[in-house]
Image 1 (spheres, rainbow, N blue to C red):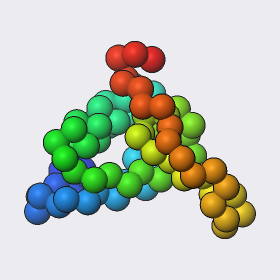
Image 2: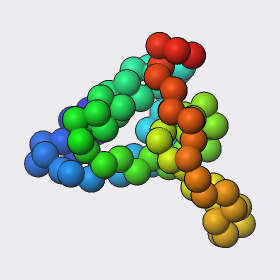
Image 3: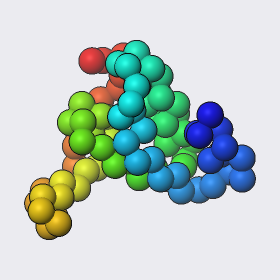
Image 4: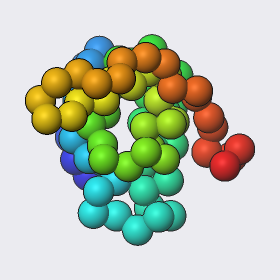
Length: 83
């Protein structure tokens, strides 16, 4: 429901703070499929997550440790159907 509310005004940037954090695995995968589809439709997404599996689905990542950028760089993009 929150994703639907966020998309009402057709934003070009969508911020997702732990979008799968409180979800079971299957529902989390469905949410990520929706977010990746939005990205394919030319929306910019910023996803904050502690889950390395979710981070691997993204084109780029920035790791932050103790408030400092620790490891900026690309993450190998992987589609949900591959993993």
